[in-house]
Amino acid sequence: MLLTTLNRTKQVAKGNLKWIDSMIRMREELITMYFKILTIQTDPNIDHTISPPTKEELHLFCNLLVDYLSRGHFEIYPKILIIMEHVSNRRLTIARRLIPRIEQTTQELLNFSDKYANLTDDLPNPKEFRTDLSILGQYLEIRFKHEDRMVIALQILDNTLALAKKLNDKKPISKEKKHDRKKKI
View (cartoon, rainbow, N blue to C red):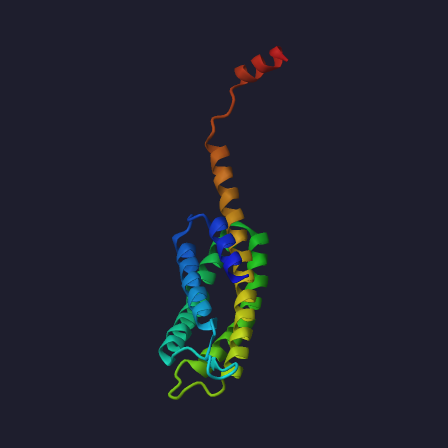
């Protein structure tokens, strides 16, 4: 589901805003690393033993996660709110409803990072890690869904403004041409 959402967001954004593209690239990197860590290897000598990722891989993933969360809160969401505030009250309402929902996921995602980012020993409990990783994936999915809704609202706004500008740039039909059209009908 995470990759499907990512691909849909890429299609909607269409490269119109570089800072949204940057967020999407960062999300793609985060998802890739998540799946790398999620891939469980089993030891053929011992039944169902989970081999966790290395501490370095986990540290890298947690850093990517925190960077992604920080960029959203301190760079991306404020820009979206400013744009929507200046152009569309309806879109601003959508964004203001979505940001608290996104923020609800932040603490859960940070909890994972706090727990696993700076391990000095091996993972305490591989099964617990697997559960925590699964929960993390659920929170990422929720967060991405809400972020995508904001990106879609922003894209609709951008398309509406582009259409309005295009219509505004067209020359108005002169009175003579209007009169000629009426005669033909």
